[in-house]
Amino acid sequence: MDETNESAGERLAAIRARIDKARERFGAPPDAVTLVAVSKTFGPEAVVPLLESGQRIFGENRVQEARDKWPGLKARYPGIELHLIGPLQTNKVKDAVALFDVIESVDRDKVAKALGAEMEKAGRRLPCFVQVNIGDEPQKSGIPVDETVAFVGRCGTDYGLEVVGLMGIPPLDVPPGPYFALLADLARQCGLKNVSMGMSADFETAIEMGATHVRVGSALFGAR
Ligand SMILES: *Cc1c(COP(=O)(O)O)cnc(C)c1O
Image (cartoon, rainbow, N blue to C red; front, side):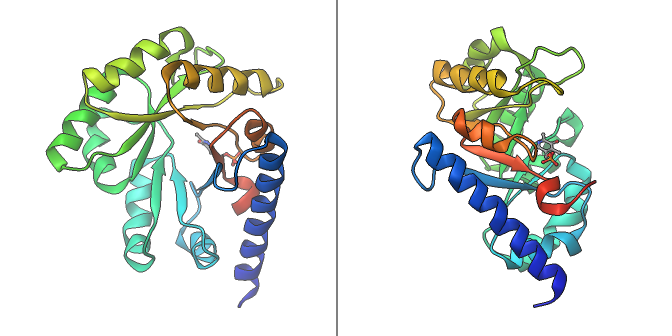
């Protein structure tokens, strides 16, 4: 094993250990938290050591970048599950449905409608998360908190999407705990069991608030 490979494996093991500790503090069972390794901006040479170490679930925030990076890796490593975690433009919906396995960033009616139509056409019904603007910040994407329950309902009834959870990003520079609690509570109100929240700086807090998916980039791959 070369040195890069070893250190990527070690970083992965260290993050997994921290996830397990936080999960035990929350009292959740062993398979309750899924690690989504966020590989945006990093090339295949950085991703391969994690694949060799057994990681199979990855997140990307741009459709075009993912298209350049992942088809080759998916052909070489079976069982990859690719999550779209960034904003989706309607003109990229076709490519996104073809390449990704989970869409975590459904954030408005126009995109939900286009996704539903494309999934129907392609015969690929992907699990989706609705992204919620949990801090109600004007510059952030996501459905407003007080419109979430109705939007999740429309995604199923009007657009034919299979919504499995909520995703959110708390505001910077304030303690994230209350925002994570809000998102977990909203998911309960919607009858959804998955909550994607927590990144490198705050995934342990997110797990203690009920995260089922944490999206960790820089703590695994290094600074961007
Ligand atoms: C980049 C990104 C992450 C990972 O952030 P890190 O701080 O590097 O762990 C998680 N979620 C989303 C939506 C992102 O864009």
